[in-house]
Image (cartoon, rainbow, N blue to C red):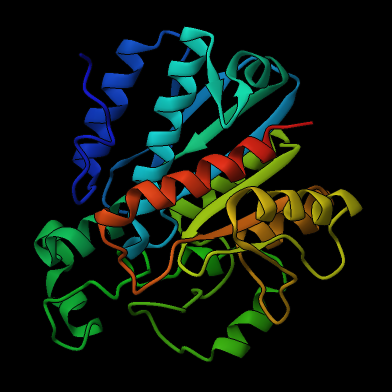
Length: 299
């Protein structure tokens, strides 16, 4: 019996992600992988394409380092969807072949690989920056609270959607574990890669997987289309999560996407607890993500 990503789940680092992606690419010929660029430390930022439909859909995960479990969730969804397509079976109660005939997915399962490695393996994962990272982390070797990339910049505060207002609201003056948006929008290679992919492909729908809170954010400064609220309500009903109309939050990927295109964009806060969420929550996280993504891909 073929190995499943879920069955072999553990703390999910960049090496595990690369191994699983190679395994799935070998197993499912319909997957197409491309490199979008590199992280600060030179790790490849990889995108997986699946489907052949006219609606172009983007889903990303692990913008935040200590939310690395979202990478495992998205890779597990990829495995399920590709397998259901091959076997002509169901995904989230729907024909996988129909979904993939109607949609083409661009998935970026690990936006922030340097940060993930830092959370899971400590500053030894970035030897040239080790001393500076320890100083930014208050001298502690425990990086479990680290959200930023390896330069101490929060990648989900890096997008040009009222970036200046978010910076003033956060009032974090220098690089560190979380909430510092940098000196300007899109200074970081990881954020640049996602922005360029979005501009190149011109997605119809986009979603970012985060943790935690069991909430679905669907709006941005009244720029969202009317169908976004309807789609969020369907996602909430399918998952048991709460659809939330968010205020006083800017500069995120979802915010920029909605502002730029006036199309449905979503941030999903998977699970409950304290980040990083434990792998023991994976079945529940995957169940909710499956239901939500099923709605995202539906007409």
